[in-house]
Length: 198
Image (cartoon, rainbow, N blue to C red; front, side, top):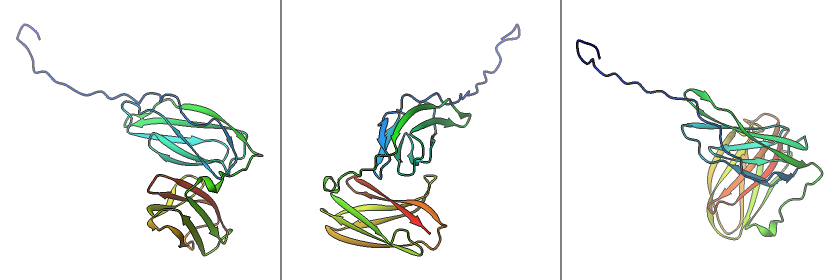
């Protein structure tokens, strides 16, 4: 505005980087075991995506504000779990938690506590692997193959009937290494088994 009058108003939007996530919730004392541990944070205002990372070789399966960690491949007794919130302006400061990993503790969750029991063979495998799933109740589920970076390489929807189920997976497209096979049932029960491809 000046002595000639009022000009035309112009507006523009300003976007800032996403803020620092709040505390990471989840177990901070774990065994080097085949069972998965779940961690989560509250949603961060302005965030579009979230990036999770962990030190020491454990396997991450990120899913937005939460992640599942399998410590079977962990190599250090103190792992740093971090998460950052991201938007179009970049990444904010990370939130982190230190997880104490007992490398000598390898007990599995007893199968009798689970409604499904899983066996994979042969293991190590080469061209093909067979997965047997014994379930008390019928349900739909997902079968996933996950690499050591937490990337889902293969995902199938399958119908799991009560009793014994047998699935066969073709492995010829995968390189040698350590992978995880995850079985998720419709009631959100998750079982993870390590697979070695030689």
